Length: 508
Image (cartoon, rainbow, N blue to C red; front, side, top):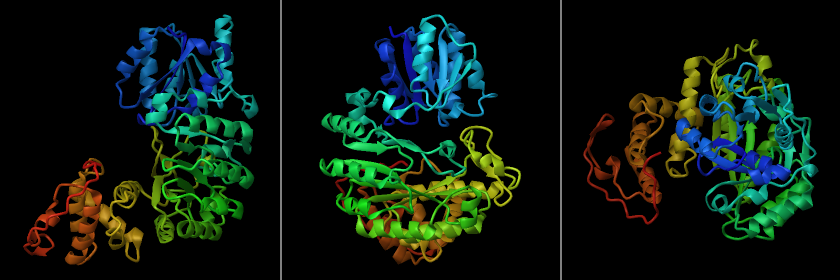
């Protein structure tokens, strides 16, 4: 039976906990008496507690994040009722700041704030020696990266076969964007590059082909970025997939000449645009050359096979609906493959709190701490924007509606899609669990009824997209060429879709 369990609740099964593997790798002589136990947030807390306590641990360390704090609080409360002698240690970004009044911290025995890679080992050693700290809260200083043991050997065969494999070539961020916890970092620190690449070679040799880099600023140091890209170019095969976060306005030629060499499906770039409004950028301490960012996005789209995932945030201080709409339209014109729209969140510890009074920012008091209303966007509008973001993800980001998407967007993408979003919710009352066949029918109606697209044009575009989807069913708009609908009286003759070989997922 292990004396020490390292545990967390992941958002999905295919996620893996990078932090737990770092803690485990750095347990030194205690590693032999420790295990990692990962769960997902959909599992019942009581079932998780039963599995943990069945191993009779003496210490359980929990990684606490914005997505699992509610469930982890229940688990810690249950453990303390069933086995109060078990030492509970918390860590993670959700409990590293503003922890004083958090219920989960009140329940636990110890809290390690910050980067706990080495501090957790020290606490366990103190426990073994019967010399536990008097203070409940332990503030961990950032460790020297060269002093850390590598976590990569602790991705097992199941992880490699079924889960995302996270890696990092650096920690920290030199920028000060106030909505982000990285604003609290002093700079970015690289890991020793040769050692890091040796670990990547180990993972590659053991079958890893999907590498998700968590570096905040992968392209900050072009020499390091180039070495990493060269490493993977030497190992290209049809299964290789690399995910990087890029600063949008920094893309030197040294990286461009390497990026163009990657084939389709090998590279994905997450590009944090967040806002194009220079006044808002200044308010939140974000430095970004918008023209250069735009130039780089255009270059990437035209000259590379990289999949581009761009981020926008709705609700930033000083940004009203018109400004956000302009930013969305500008980004749509640049044609990234995906535009991820997020509602501003007040993560614990982030400097965005300094704008609360000036802009009357009112945040959800519970996770995920999303903005509920502000001076510029009221509650009703933010709810509409949340639905807009969800429907955009289902439609604009899904890759299923290549022919239909231009009809949805027209010359005013934000305005037209907001009209469609409002209509979809009024019609269905749902933002989730919309069957794909039903979504096709809803889009047909929305295009014709709300966006004034001709029936034949809407049907032709949706038919092409439906045939490409691989679905074997036949939605209403295809079954009947003319029938009575709210848009007009017409009866349709049956049109049978061609059979597709690709497997589809009917429920979204």
